[in-house]
Image 1 (cartoon, rainbow, N blue to C red):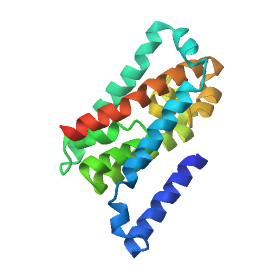
Image 2 (image 1 turned 180 degrees about the vertical axis):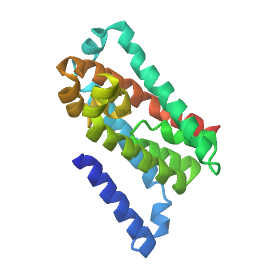
Image 3 (image 1 turned 90 degrees about the vertical axis):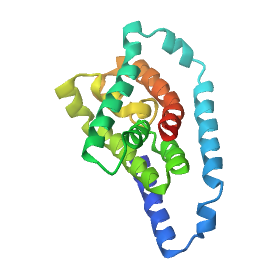
Image 4 (image 1 turned 180 degrees about the horizontal axis):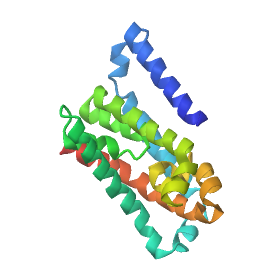
Length: 200
């Protein structure tokens, strides 16, 4: 939760700086976002490769539960297409690109901004932050109403980091490995799916 509030704070600060002219527009339109994206990808790869038990945990998973990331992705696509019906000024591919962030707002918003512009990038940022916050706040109700797998699916790419503690607390310690596996798979799909829908 604290991390999400920090990100929102930086976003608001950026809006204020851009609106008031405190930061030059030339800086905002430079390659800084590309280098930030490269740094994010390196850090994700480092965090996965730095844990020697990651692959052992993945191998021990029940094979049937391996379908959970696929169902999360398909469910998000279905929701994104349904939302596109309510937003006639946005194409289905725009909505699918935003949804394909799976709460990985830092990476997806940069990619979408590069491909589709700042407006859709901002929409994707806010939508994906909202997904993470809803998971953090609503996980206990999700477990009660929809079952123990629902917070994992709702958390998207964040289930291997920011939403893992609340998932462990509400779903149980036995779902930690599944949550890590789910987050890894969904996280890995983000740059490919976002880029694909932005390019269509």
